[in-house]
Image (cartoon, rainbow, N blue to C red; front, side, top):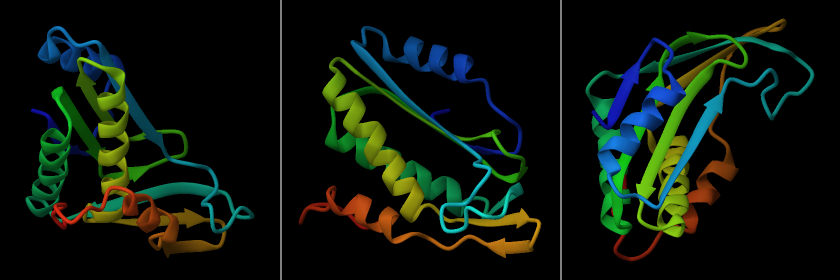
Length: 159
């Protein structure tokens, strides 16, 4: 399955191997693996001890599948993968994987970046971080919204 939401960790190597098999004669596979950071960007004075992600089952998978489909419509991709974790994670744990395979690197790079930009700004996840100061919900960042602006065209569907 090319889109998954799960609590358990994932094997980066296993995911890449599966994308590679699915892609066949790919010339490029681009991956991005996001990790839980020790410090949230808006507050680098309080160490994050854990991050909890919540989602609405069914709704989240549908949103991720729409993001993936949009990438497949924009670029000549041979295979894609989105794996996003939910639940409680500690620092440096893997939280998300995006992979795109294509005959050429340009399409793979752009598709992976597109999917990640849309995941950060349009996927229905809610993040709560725990620090020495207590728990707080993580707000979306303006930089995430501006990152998707470059992908906006009159033909682009809204997620």
